[in-house]
Length: 94
Image (cartoon, rainbow, N blue to C red; front, side, top):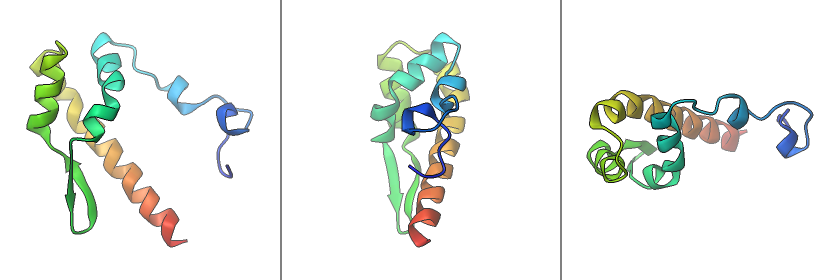
């Protein structure tokens, strides 16, 4: 894949997933539930619009993650997903 330095994709550098892997128990729980959270997205006329926060909080609570931690981390998770979606839209236009 062009543009990737990650060894996982044929480059020689470290993979961002490894470099930026969460260190806390709560962060690792969010990462493990990433696919479940991604499916709790809101879609608008322009595409991906964000996460359904109540559904995400319910999923995380069911996994035993305290609400006060999930409430702090979910906005950053959502921001990252929105940024990735915007990049995909830009790449598709090129």
